[in-house]
Image (cartoon, rainbow, N blue to C red; front, side, top):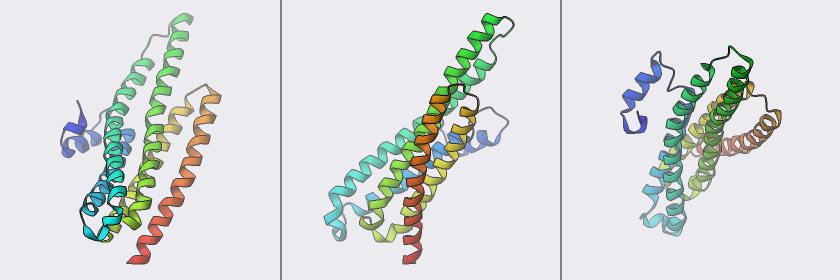
Length: 208
């Protein structure tokens, strides 16, 4: 099933049910896609408006970037479900003999890394959403500034949600070098993202 082709009602019903997937990873990807959709809306209401003619070219680029980010996040929503299935299958592999246990551990390590990459990518994409929010705040249609604020809040929320999914996957990995590299990178991205979101939040509250 491709949830991005289904109704929102279908997704939230399955998310609510006693099913292995979708779960938190898919939910965080969807929230990120919604954040980018809001940026698309703001850009669309800016392009073609004479008041913002000087920003038209930049807003067109921001719109194209936002469409790509939205689509990439919807793809990750599906990929999160696929990788969870792989992890689940790996844990069901036989472990009666030493050879079986060795093979099982190897496969678990491999698929857990794949499962880690999905929320890690969500974090990086949502960081880019915030980088789109930044210029849209002052160059986008001023009537929609709070929509930029909502996009920023949702993007950061998606990032933090995905970070929880990264952490639980890293917990089960043995590759310390890989774990340290991922954590170091994410901490840097989150730090910058939190500063951008804080600035946008404060600016939105100053205006209204």
